Image 1 (cartoon, rainbow, N blue to C red):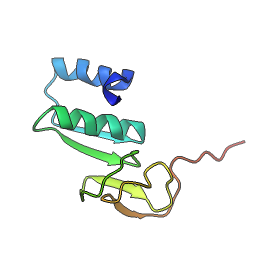
Image 2 (image 1 turned 90 degrees about the vertical axis):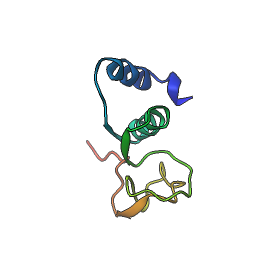
Image 3 (image 1 turned 60 degrees about the vertical axis):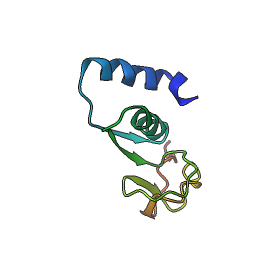
Image 4 (image 1 turned 90 degrees about the horizontal axis):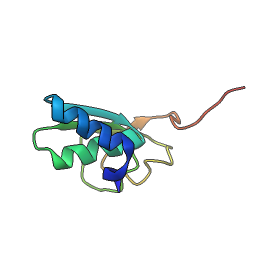
Length: 90
């Protein structure tokens, strides 16, 4: 499903013309980064608040303790106390 997202297709297009070693993403961008890493050996993915459901530990996945989007990422580093997916504005 992630492979059908425009953001993933853009990354694939960019990867075809450049040598990518590391991708970083927040939220949906984190899902795109992890999917890209899964399909390209040697690529490192760093994610923040990605909607991932896994128990596998990784020092490259991070989430805030009360973030509902990444709540099922039990292997992520959960040290922060903010809500990055919130919007407080006028």
